[in-house]
Amino acid sequence: MEAKRKLIFVCSGSDCKKAGIKSLKKELKQAMKEGELKGQCKMITTKCMDFCKSAPVMIVGNHICKKATKTKVLEQIKKP
Image 1 (cartoon, helix red, strand yellow):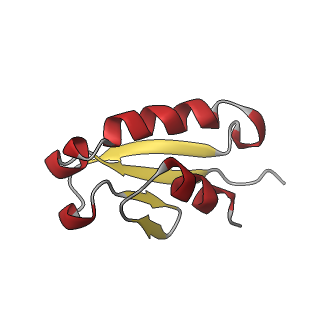
Image 2: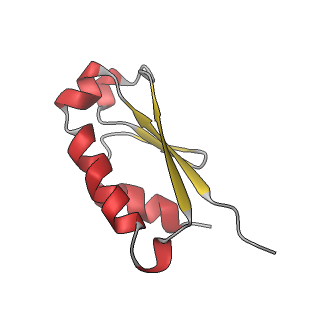
């Protein structure tokens, strides 16, 4: 049985944009094209998630990743 891909929801609100969500998204896309993460994730851009004080924000699976960094998001992706 094939493992399900993890969904990553990326906030595109103005505070997240100011906090660098675009460059973070680009870094993560590159990381997900390589190695063990290849084909395991799908990134979906959303409207504002209303966690503006914690920007940038991503949701990985069922986890809200506030003040997201590449390291934090990759750790969540790798969790079962």
